[in-house]
Amino acid sequence: MEPLKYLVGYPEHVLARVQALIEQGRLGPMLADKYAQPHAVRSDSQLYDYVQALKDEHLRRAVPLGKVIYDSKLQVMKQALGTHTAISRVQGDRLKASREIRIATVFRDAPAEFLRMIAVHELAHLKEAEHNKAFYQLCTHMEPDYHQLEFDLRLYLTHLDVGHRVPGS
Image (cartoon, rainbow, N blue to C red; front, top):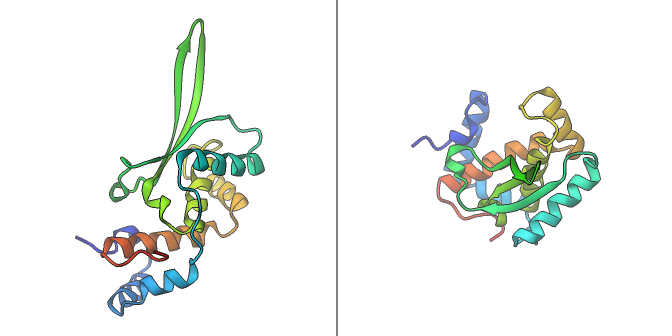
């Protein structure tokens, strides 16, 4: 199993530095120092309120959210950290659409910044379906440190994958 699977596509010098941090046992402590603040979003209803507040702040005109939940079935190994879906149901003679966001349960115990990053990512999909320039501009509008947080989240997942202690626990 390749220990740096979350960092595929990054330059070789970055991968070498991360590998060195892992071998020296410094990756976990570095992440714990940088992201020491846990979050209090434990339940699905708290998660809904949290994501809805972000949506109200940045995407007031976007379609309403029907459901936001932690999903234990999302497989981090398959790169699905969160999903967004549009569900259409027939109600009488009308078609009712509902938007759902599901966030992997790994974020229940992750640092607060990583939960915010994944929530921002999934909210951005309400406006932009593809991972294109407009999508990432929207992400950085909602979270200016989005790209650094995404990279650090990949480091965090790598740290979890190699079997070390979770930062902040």
